[in-house]
Length: 162
Image 1 (cartoon, rainbow, N blue to C red):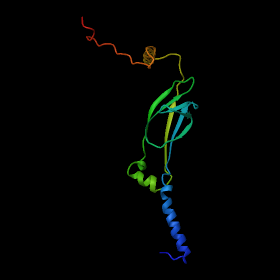
Image 2: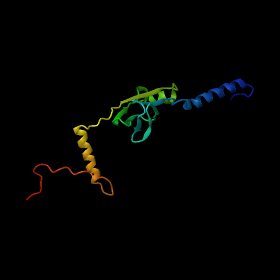
Image 3: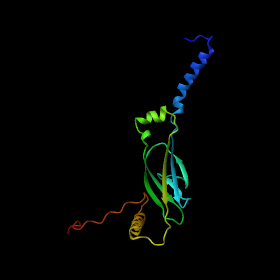
Image 4: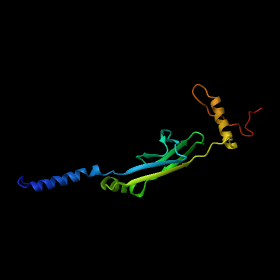
């Protein structure tokens, strides 16, 4: 027990207790950011089917994993791709318990995604045209409950029996 006549010891003990108690509050100083850039800039960005802004864009995130990034800009072809956001070595279990919680170093986890947009031409390629016609036919056949998938044509020899 500390005697009240020793205020310096009491202050020192109190300072140590506060420092230990605030350590969990100081942890988790990781700055996770996805830097989205497009050429040309100003493209509308959708991240996992949610509009998040226009490029250039620095977007904070919490969890690593796979994300779908889509960019659209008038006069350019839309671009959509799946991007893997991998955790760095210090953010993997069990190291993350120490690096992110106990050691408040201010880690930075930055992932850069760059998208090159192509000017939209007047002509579609054959595969793009087929995909567009397939989607159009699906929408044409849509009922009140929404589009129904097209039935594939029967294989040779699987037609109705005579």
